[in-house]
Image (tube, rainbow, N blue to C red; front, top):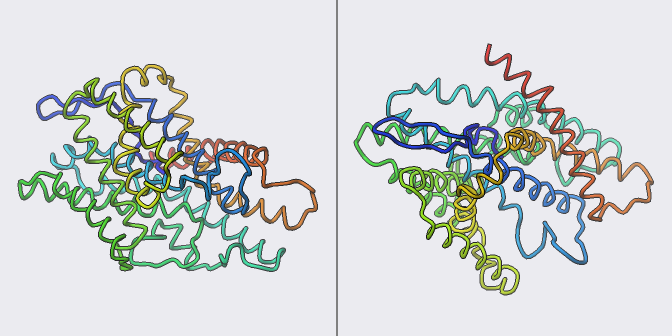
Length: 368
């Protein structure tokens, strides 16, 4: 979802050949938190297999909130902008990539093994696989190493399903480095390379490719991640005007009206509308001075870090919940908004403990 989105939601200004870092944009941290909540609600309804009679349904409703993962990819690409110049100035692949990899993998690996243990408990106690997920040591190791989807391996059991985001994100970081390096070597604008991977993602979806590095999972990453990079080159190399902010607000309002009142007009293309129009417009609004000032507290940075941990742990929590539902006669209606909010609260508590007791501790060790 985005741990390394990449740790630098900053306001950036170009001066000559140097990138000047200004105040961190905590408003974009807040945006990550909101998107994470929507994803958790989406998966809660999906795996509890229930819908609400009224109000917003986050799964199976008029809008697929699973597309919020695209927003994570866009933000990840957006915050790669400073590294365009760093790569062109000669930062080594090791310095660029290895630190990202080793900061993500410990948490991903622990969550993968815990998830598979809980899946095994579900099979033993309930007598059936959890949503056809089985326990497989090799595929757990592949997922724990960050190669769950998109690479040369094809993981058939979806170990801790949301972690595919991390797997594809690592691949996008890899491609970003080499495309930026090649743009310098051949004196070609990097935008051409970034745009080409957006079109590659569209082609994968259009023609149903299922190859290593070219499949439905990488397609989502390529389209959204490199859209974020292109958006950053637009935003950071010029000042955003008031007219552009107004246009962004109008676009958001128009799309929301179409979704709510004329969903048939946009339903088939909502994935691309969200990736290429809606989410970039939302980012443009959230980075405006008035929103940045309104959401300017440092607490949103910590909240975003906790949200990432909650995102990673949501599937183990859902498996544990299904084990409880199938083995304890509680009489509780879990297909309710109250239970969904309780699940969110538990996910936040788990994410908080994970951030401070696992993630930060591993990062201290890695830094040393």
